[in-house]
Image (cartoon, rainbow, N blue to C red; front, side, top):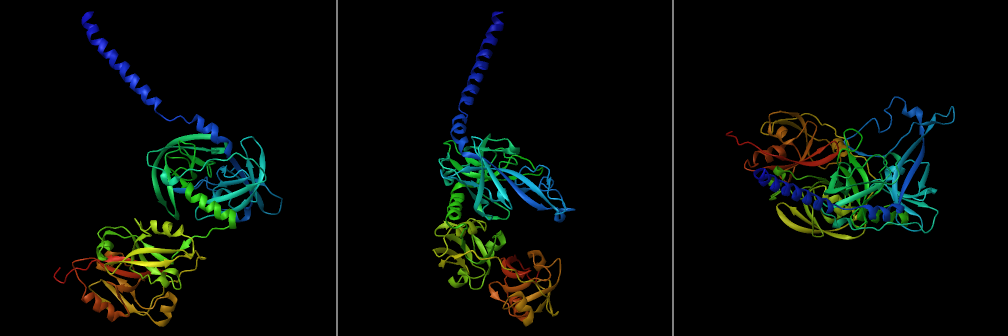
Length: 477
């Protein structure tokens, strides 16, 4: 028995120590009870009603519940069955639910633009169960921010934090109305910052693992100090429900948008007037860059701020007012937050040499239509590239809105052009930073081109300009 106790006693001590350590670790986990108690009164439920033309919907899938996209706004957030409209009019009512939060005592409320998009009626339900009709002050679809106004005074407001101070691994919590369940609380950590999503060039999203579901749209994301650091906006999903990754709009971005919406009802954002593309490894080498940082200018719009400042296709933008452009997705955000009319200094690389360019930022214009590609008559082939090319006539130049170039009529799938990503119908406008006026110019440029490095080739494809990096083989290969 003594011999047995000699082994059991240390084991018991070890178990007790392990339990104590686990209890100590559990005590270190954050407690959100006070945060929820203080913040919940400032979080609201938003319900909308909109009239839908059922004749236009016949034969199409039902709403977004049946079409789970990889990246999707979770709007239509809760869509109960449609209620019949007036007989014979072919319209029905659609209802949706979302969340929001009070940003001023006199009744201004922030939410997502997609929550109230197309709404004919907006009703805000407060924490004390009052239901107030809201008017839309303004909405900005590019950042997915909207501001509402209700007729009320002395409303409880939330404290705004500094989203720029967020760090990966930091605890955060969300309060909202998933599936219509008011003031539900979920928590997690920040899993990434400055995340860029498809079609959202102006928002550096906060990525979290906080459970977000339909109905949470527009609700606040809190730090441990109870300050709002973001607006829950999107989820990553293959099923239509939460799968462990959610995205919030940084509150610093949202408040700037909200202030503009309150002041003027619309948003002004900076604009350069350039088409940009990422810098690949081969393009970096061809332009003399040590790495793939920066945004490559593929085209410059006429009469744009970039054109007036002397920016050119082939310039690589490395920084904006000393703030580094990490990749092509960074540049629109940096320029977009500049007030139109303000000057910025762009650090660029041109023909392998660094230089600074002063640009007076313009205001974002209405989007225009891009020119469509047309083909010219067939001409000689260029075997070293693996293409058949032809000159552009005056009509084709006008239609493509280009001053020079040759069109690719045929392509050898084993050739250098195909390997670089050039396709049939592309217009080659420059080769190794040399403008291509006609087929003879391209033939001569290719003949004298080096084989020991990647060569930047600028093309126009379906009205859009971009660069590809091309490598030629030597004649001995």
